[in-house]
Image (tube, rainbow, N blue to C red):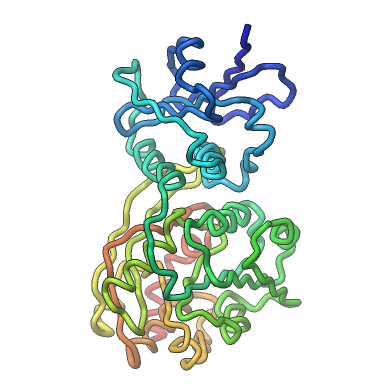
Length: 358
């Protein structure tokens, strides 16, 4: 008789088991018939069952999980995403899909719906036809050991690769650098600073070495949708943007103890002048800079406000408006993780001081 082992998506899968099959539950109350699942799985490696826009369970062959290991929990933005990253590593022909006609006691919160939409992107094929323009990502990290692995994994899982991933570590005192070095990301180059200088000065160290046409700024505690680069390339090609700054919307999450909770989509808006900029509900982003323009400005301007460690992005954007256009597009591929240690949260009250400084 075929044996099955069952576990919840937020639990670690059993390491030592003689079971032939595994059932991962995305919902708490799931009924199933083993023989029906085996017949539906047939010769495939995985069977993903859903009801409308909610995922219910994942039925897998345990030998497939052994041959294609599940990503680490720290590499996924939330627990459910681990299994969709894993599915994305399988050949599409080895995945079967089942649409359920009914289910009981379905958990359908705003957060669960948003997670399901994000998970779906991992297994959707990329439809992009053009590799141009080239895009890189720049990251400044400082004591980011809690989230740096999921940040970098979100780059590795892009449906379309970036040209460079340039990370500058601003003299971290925790395990950040070791985790970065363990990351399997071929496009990654790392620069370590001996002394902490702040985000803007750290990024200025690496901006001259970026060779792509465009560069996206990514914070070390945030992450990208798996189709982020493909979406951005399509936008640039369909709108014929040649220079300047491209930005859109943010998806906000609240970091809880063991997971993240979806809060809102923060819609961007057009910025045409300095007044629009200073009235903008910051931060503005995600920020995709035309690389040669960013290099021509010399990167982030020097600032004496809190030693150049606060609102440095605003200073750069003010200078940018004097030379290059802003382009807003209604797209959402960037995930902002709100947590107690974030610099933005700690220093939000200093905004009025900064306006007086200007």
